[in-house]
Image (cartoon, rainbow, N blue to C red; front, side):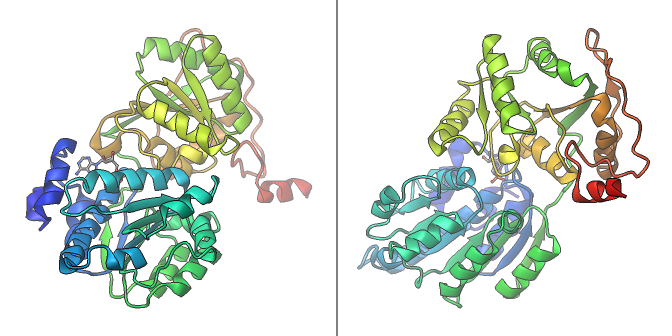
Length: 414
Ligand code: AMP
């Protein structure tokens, strides 16, 4: 189905042209029509599936219709309250979603004010930015509450609410903030629920918020092997930086996103790569927001070859045409593995996902493989043959990761 069969306004179709999307992705073709009709939707779709445009396009179209209906009094309603509010868990996702909205709004008949607010930076410029209101507000929950407390934003005229990455909003403990925000929103509104996974907590919340939703399921939860080429390489822990450098040279990677377990490891490996003449920067929660934005912008613009990240970048972040992801440290869980490797192979493009497995993490790797029902050949590269001893299997089981879980510790105390 082409985009012009979805009932979208010519201004939006025109904005899509430079993006050269071949056709709507499944989440777009299934979500756009019901959202245009004003229905609630419950969508399970991973990032990378095109879900942002799946709600941004129909919400902008609803804004066009509403603003045309207020021709005599342009912006009156918008000045009082945004028409749509998008709540999401992280600053990076907020910036990205704001950019998508803006790029799709370039040809609208009237200027649509799209405002993005998030924590970790001074609130004053955001309060100034909200003076006179806005039409579409993209916000992280904590900062939105702060702005509400300062009377900088009114929400009583809201018509559509989007919860993006609802599962992560709950994972990150935003439940209380969400409840406070939901309490002041008009009861009569459209609610759009987007989540990568639908655990019990998310389904329960969706039941309290949604009115006869149209359900759209565009999982694959598991990575698509045809798109993402997964590899696992057996290597001593102490040889991993060397191996990374070796692969950078021999595999001809244009860019690579490398996941490490700790902020310290990210800093350390980035320094080692820089010392070897490879442009590399760490990306983690300890860095200032300014630095994080800079690193991301540089990476997206191709000015940086390697970004070393904690799981901060494993979800939500969209880097187009990222050819390769490396698990320098294995992720704690199979779900984290899915999210990490999903940073490559976006929107159907090919990508490589490599995991460095050490003798001591081999058992954990097999658990991840088992959860994904895959079995990769553990490669050994010449010059990087592992010499570390394989640890004796823990007879109590429970090899979950590098850090023992509560259960592991409890078992050991017996
Ligand atoms: P998202 O799931 O919103 O994070 O989008 C992931 C990526 O898919 C973004 O880089 C979009 O530019 C891209 N994208 C969105 N819609 C389409 C489409 N219809 N065809 C191809 N790529 C798309």
